[in-house]
Amino acid sequence: DFSIQPHCALHCLNCRGLNNPIKRSKIFHYLHHAGAHVIFLQETHLKPSDHVRLKKGWINQTYHSSFSGKARGVAILLHKSVPFVHTSVVSDPNGRFVIVTGQIHNTSVALINIYAPNYDDEGFFKRLFSLIPDLSTHYLILGGDFNCWLNPHLGRSSSAVCAPSRSAKAILSFMKEYAVSDAWRFFNPTKREYSFFFSSSPYLHSH
Image (cartoon, rainbow, N blue to C red):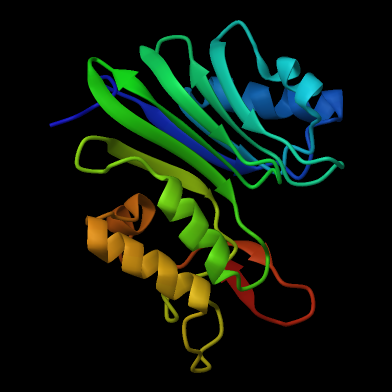
């Protein structure tokens, strides 16, 4: 069995911008005191040269993808105690994902952080999945903001019947083919918890 270390906390957070130094300081204070080891941040809104601001005394590895304007952007941050040795990085020029492969305790791992389009874009997920390394030789840790729900009963506050989006079908197909599990749903099989309110409708959408 693979484990990063005896206790490793993975945190995933949509920041909606990290340019404000006070906001950035508060977020890092929260992550540090929460004991985060592997951190996936979305919507960093940082230029490539600004990512040096994400390195702290307790964070010694950062990987990122940026967009041209103050929008999108993702980053993977690793606590100094995580013995990760990277071998390759794929950084999306549109600030939508970063794929980092490497080794932890001589075990091959793929760390992937995404910020998906906020509309149904099946092609985005198919392109992303085509770039993932061989999962027969790598353990996969995939996180981020998928901007869609996978379960029509638990992922939405509305009781109205609604078919899964094309994006959701692409994700579910990938999960089935490679036996990938949603860790949050695995530990919360019947729980409803929402992270986004869609202002043009009365319905809440889950993470």
